[in-house]
View 1: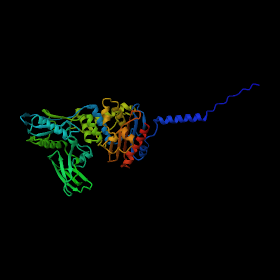
View 2: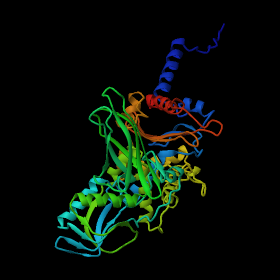
View 3: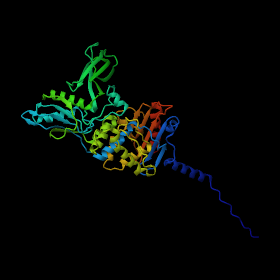
View 4: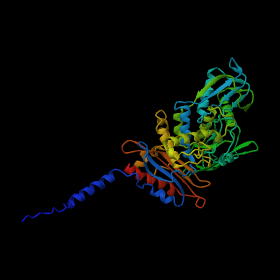
Length: 502
């Protein structure tokens, strides 16, 4: 009898199943999935705050994670990324700003017969050191007497109006440097520089030194005493302007033998202050001015007697970003408009159209599906001091991607953004080693009318490539205030989890 055997289905061995499953699990762990959720802390925060966040790989534009990436919020100082990018595009990394002494008069012997005109060139970082260099150039021509006026020409920008609450308030009372007014002829970031020294004995008044030596135009109300060496320093300084008179007020106590304590406070009129600084320096150098000291715009013409150039734009961007210098960022923004021939006087919203154009271009080239005509980023200042600025995480990531793909500009742009380990600010110094060394980030902070915390920049992938990230956090009308732990710790924790996998 023929017996036909029906072959049974072969059952896989349990060991093979386990090995295959284990291999697949290891593979999944080794290659992070794009759908993975990394921004968990920020997602939790978004229940009580407005959050826009996005993290991508730049080589293929793949999204690692995102939260409301198209929601436009107040970005604060991360706006400076646009000022830097637009300036690099228009001027180039090697550009230098030039400040000059000119005259329509003539030099006879050691005397200039005519007005000495300082022509402000819109240098965002012009300081006393460069003014000394400029005056030395005048001395090298043998000039030791000005038979005429000392005139500061601030016509490159014209009389720039204050359009933010902080800057307008600072014209009357200034307790900080960040709200300094703007001018093409400003010096020392439009601040008055002061050194304060404790006295030699306890109970002595402190010594207050305005810089440069002999600076006029300020009354000093000094109520700073000298304490014992073991006491802690306390110093409060503010500048007021009333009935045409600026007064520097100082209160507190300093330990015996300490100083100098270096103080910077916003001035009322930057061009007028430059005129006073130049007058003091010329006098200190033994160059007499027989006429008046004044400000006048658009004098034009004349022969150049001496000139001084700034550092390169690439070099200037480093302190601009590191110290989040509002004066530098907004002066750069005005420089863009002046170079483009806009009508004077310039205003920041008008000048910031160049930044908005860059934002639109970057979004269109990197995320064309999200670029909607007439509905772009809003930038009314390069500094971010204007709370009317509105940017989304996608806007910022688009800019970072756009600059990454500009081979002649990216080194200067990337090099200007601080690395937490070496940044002067302590805001980013609390993370792990990857956080401290593998990201370049520009922060943004405002306290009114709601808390604003932002961070945008680049990170290095474990394979040597680049990624880009942007986090923008705003308080709400019902919860306007947010703590450091709620905001900075949240995006730091989430970013560290991404760095661990990527």
